[in-house]
Image 1 (cartoon, helix red, strand yellow):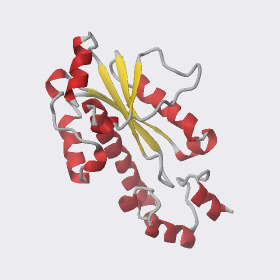
Image 2 (tube, helix red, strand yellow):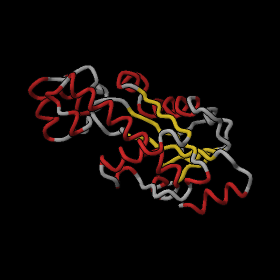
Image 3 (cartoon, rainbow, N blue to C red):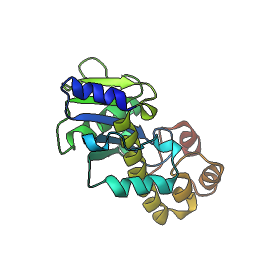
Image 4 (spheres, rainbow, N blue to C red):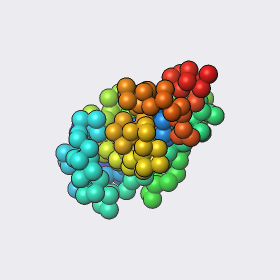
Length: 202
């Protein structure tokens, strides 16, 4: 994981930015993109893909590093997602998270596959890395920050809509979530364009 970023720094790249997203699959809530630029002294910090960490461990890393690194998390709401569709929503979230960074990256390392169409690619050099959240430190860090940020939103939404258990399922399609939908219908943060929600909406 460390080698690739070190090699980029040796080539002259100073601000290497990792980007990862969370929340593409849930039935409710926003999608979130995280972006992190790690300082050299944190390049060997034991980051992991957020999915491999407990919620407590993610929170601890977030609190430990939030004032030590350059980072941003940007969201696209469920209503924006319904209007744009997932492909364009991802591009919008990407633009927001990069523009919101305190420093401009020299290069951006993005988890996953190519998401841009002709004319959409940013001027900053970008590389897409399959399974990047397990290979690249800055991407792993971005996944953690995005996950913590989004989870906090969903916990806050639980207080408004406790019947859906958003504090536990974070908007994902669990049995308890489905049972609540059948009993109560949808709320304002559900993604109406997603197939399971469409069925309930009629």
